[in-house]
Picture 1 (cartoon, helix red, strand yellow):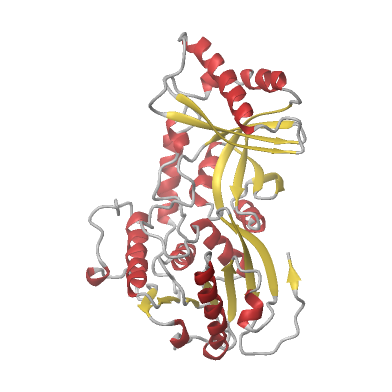
Picture 2 (cartoon, one colour):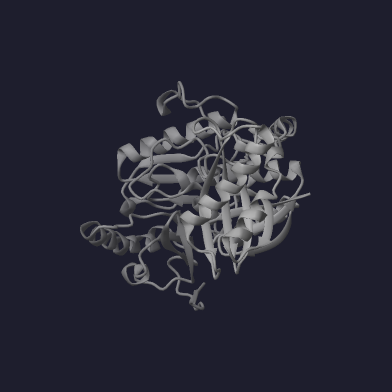
Length: 408
């Protein structure tokens, strides 16, 4: 068994933990934006292919105490790098995290770790120096209370790059954060879902992947497969297994709209691209346009150009209501912020048009509730990339309920 670290948005740890439990993967410990787990090679690939909320998965190579650079160097040089890195590869030391530790200078930590790993590899390979160009392996260093973790990136591109989105909207939402929104909201495929600010369709597509029982990593490669610790035979078997689990005929009711016709068109194209990828096709070339695409079932997600003010609950909604899950305009600049606040006020119409539904909103605006005109049932802190955001959840629109106002 090996130890790994899964990174996620701060605030998404509960969702990621639940995913790991469902994969029968043993969790070792967790902290903000980071969960350590133990797995064999199959479990490693299952995590890479199946986790919806993880931004990266890293392999823990060493864990040791270091209060000075000599100890950092010696601990790093003791790692059997020649068994982990292919001959001729470069070493890249990426992000460094240091909290409550004597070693905190990022560039110095990077330089020492690189020197130690390179020195051992040069000795093992009988060369004077590592190449400056070509394939590379990325390392990360986490230091917490003087305890060093040396980590090897297994992903290459971050896991939120699923391959289906070629263009983002005005307020781009990471795929992994969208998945966390859905899982934390309590939405399940038996409930209808509507996004009135669908943009490029990220929330709709993540909901569809979940509802189709589709693993989100099926359309992309992983850096670990080119390393000695990778196993393409196991990876291929798992890809076949996970692809066989997909069911495009599951009864789902997923809807999206956007006031921008171009955004709605992009969302439709991205949905089709996601479908093509899940079928093992190279969706980056010759993608079928919405006009000549035949959906695989009657339950294909529906997207249209529509102002938020005129969006209404679909005709097939039932007494249980549904979920409005959305990422409205953020408004980073002053003029845009004022426009965003006007949008938040206008969203009050959703109370009338979606009675009995739940509303889940992500925004970086801490005053969303005052503009919307109603206190949320719960407010959670969550990050969207580097942007600190808030997840507001409202229970049963159009009804006055006595709920505790919780901020977590």
